[in-house]
Length: 499
Ligand SMILES: *[C@@H]1O[C@H](CO)[C@@H](O)[C@H](O)[C@H]1NC(C)=O
Ligand SMILES: *[C@@H]1O[C@H](CO)[C@@H](O)[C@H](O)[C@H]1NC(C)=O
Ligand SMILES: *[C@@H]1O[C@H](CO)[C@@H](O)[C@H](O)[C@H]1NC(C)=O
Ligand SMILES: *[C@@H]1O[C@H](CO)[C@@H](O)[C@H](O)[C@H]1NC(C)=O
Ligand SMILES: *[C@@H]1O[C@H](CO)[C@@H](O)[C@H](O)[C@H]1NC(C)=O
Ligand SMILES: *[C@@H]1O[C@H](CO)[C@@H](O)[C@H](O)[C@H]1NC(C)=O
Ligand SMILES: *[C@@H]1O[C@H](CO)[C@@H](O)[C@H](O)[C@H]1NC(C)=O
Image: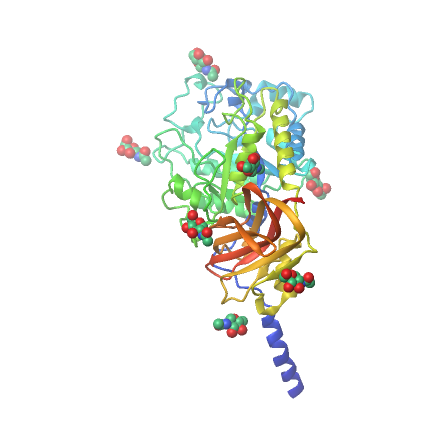
């Protein structure tokens, strides 16, 4: 008895000494943690608007309008994969209400158009959503779906004289005052989409569901967001639910590929509370009640849908968006629409590749390698093996430098072997245990004399600091000035060249 007890009491302090910090307030769900790491992916707006040169079609065209001359979803997926994008999100139904998949919920679907009938007669699939999903997995990128809650096709406030008397003249059930249940229709459409299968019968995994908040009519429709969320959770537990009303990810408050330098992954409203203004969506709320990080939806051209009159933005502009979104801990969802052939224009793919080259030329110059000497003001319980500052150089997102719980300020210093020219710094907080840090500095040291190069506030998943000019350094020091709980740093990197 006695040896057994004393063994236990000897073991106990060791267990405590190796204990990881407790989570701080809200933490990301596993699906959100994976989503942060996607960083940059494509939005694909495709549908009747592509062929009518509209952004918000009024549901006046029959499905015959949808007739791509050379549809090739492999071309989309390969193009996005080659461009270093992590996935794509396709408009399965935009505001006009026409479905791009073979739905049982409406006659207003491309499957009823001549293009689809010809495809099927030739033994080819005409289900663009399933085709795109198969292409995505083939080229190793994620797949997500946009399903517009506002549906002009069902909205009594939107007259559709061209469809009167056709099989597309369907009950006007959108709106709280209408007779009919739009929430039920939407739930059935969502259910079909979250249970889609590949040809071999395996279910198609979705990484994100985009439930747009936009509406251009006065019809008031109270959406059953909780039911929609439950449908997603039950069938696609790994999928992030995006929306003004969403719980997993929020709109960044603009569509320009930009966010403010100080912004937080948390906010404090539920899906049932009134909308935040754009500014609050950008900044989030520090120590907010929900982990609801921002995603910036932006466009390679002016419109969301393809228009012959428009051109892609420059690679420089896309690089700027990247720095002001991904470089500020916000995911970048870049719209790259197919044209009337059903392919992404070559010009846009070339721009994406130029942008990728710029990104890689900039990022692929890491100077901080695992072998370097790192020191820190403090290490959690003196346990350098588990929580030492060398963890910030090991390339492992799950390890981090930590101090004791009662220490919220401190520094780490990385000693380079000789002088280097440094022009950018990349910092990552270990967000798996919450967002904690609210103030930090980075200094470049030369023989023990320091020059301030970064003065930051929020850190979060990833911060990229591009310096206005290169500095010389033989060491890099990160000081944490303010943190609401002991700070946890998973990565520090400096970009530049050895002198
Ligand atoms: C709808 O009908 C009007 C009048 O016939 C016609 O001018 C218009 O082109 C039609 N719109 C579409 C999208 O077919
Ligand atoms: C079915 O196809 C998908 C997509 O190619 C693939 O990921 C999955 O492993 C396949 N499932 C089976 C059971 O072969
Ligand atoms: C429903 O209709 C009534 C009577 O026309 C109107 O006063 C009310 O504002 C409408 N409500 C909504 C939510 O549209
Ligand atoms: C690491 O650098 C510190 C500060 O210059 C120095 O005191 C320490 O001896 C170095 N450690 C190693 C293993 O080189
Ligand atoms: C801080 O925490 C450490 C480890 O738990 C403990 O040893 C130390 O006494 C604490 N210091 C203060 C000032 O409370
Ligand atoms: C960091 O920048 C803020 C805001 O400009 C400023 O108030 C603060 O003094 C700066 N801190 C340091 C240590 O330079
Ligand atoms: C970084 O800043 C420099 C100097 O302002 C600028 O020339 C360069 O284009 C910037 N790089 C990136 C990737 O933003």
